[in-house]
Length: 442
Image (cartoon, rainbow, N blue to C red; front, side, top):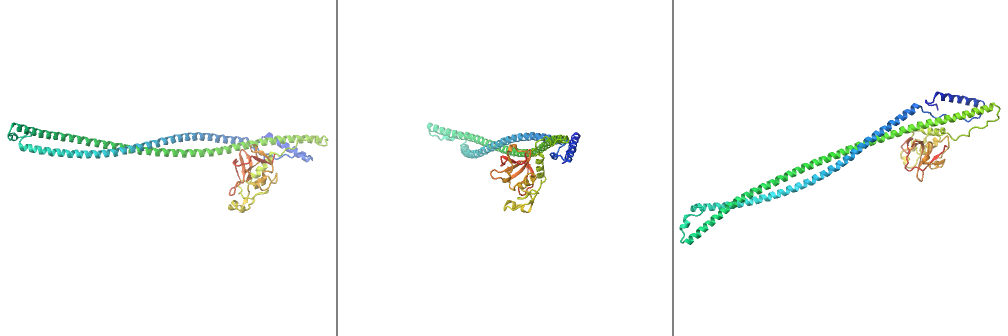
């Protein structure tokens, strides 16, 4: 793999000098340890650009979080406002029912008042008729108090006195009837006015209550609509925030990945220089007549280059179709029948990988793996999930293992997920994951 653009001229010179020295040593028949190929070395500009992108996404997440907080605060206010408007609508409904009851009561009282007024009018008419008869009789006798004839017809003073008293009584009764008639008219007018006033007031209160109820209903509907609109806005902001958070995660993962690449490259470069120094010392000893090199560095364990080669093989299959039972050390193969879900997706007619088949292909240069995730779990050293590192295999159960994926670091993994899917990179799913990862390298 070629050096990245971030390699300085001095480092390139050192690497070139080391390579020439290695060629000379190998040409001289030395037995030096072969230096692995260099891992990718991201440039400073790539690192800076990735950090800027991550910072920009982080700033955007912060802004969206603030906007979402304000939107949710406004939504809470609108919820309270809706509750208030609903209570106001309930109050208006109670007031309306009370006003309607009062109007019905006023109508009943008006009907009763009209009946009383009609009775009073009838009494007035009766008294008017009696008065009319008295007036007519008095006129016929020539006096309202009595005629002279009534007196002249008396046989004795006692009879005269009795007749005068009788006429006076009749006259007083009719005068009382006239006063009673006038009082009845006043009472009728008062009752009519009271009934009209009560009815008018009740109708006014009912109309006011109906208007208040309509206004309360409209205010409640407007508040509910505002709450719905604000809830939709909050949901939209939440979706935007989640999207930008995913972008932030991806940007941070890219920063972490590039920084890991830079660190691995620096480690490789340091190791390469140590090996070149050891080889130069060995060559010097050989040229001085030494029968054998005085010793070299202890053989190193599997290098990160081996892990990267495994990951590179897996990554080369991104987008390849899932096929149950498919995949071997050479690449994707035709799937097989399972008599169920895979058959319904036609996996037996597809060329691709299942989850364990992808691991077989990825680790083909390291170890031969069985085509079953449950067996692959025991093919290497178990490490706690919290200590999992790039290149480890992750498994899902619990109990009977049913899925395996390759850990990429930074919470990401590559997997052949399921029938109908394709080989992909995805965030690690911790639901049902086994508590140990399996490590084949290192």
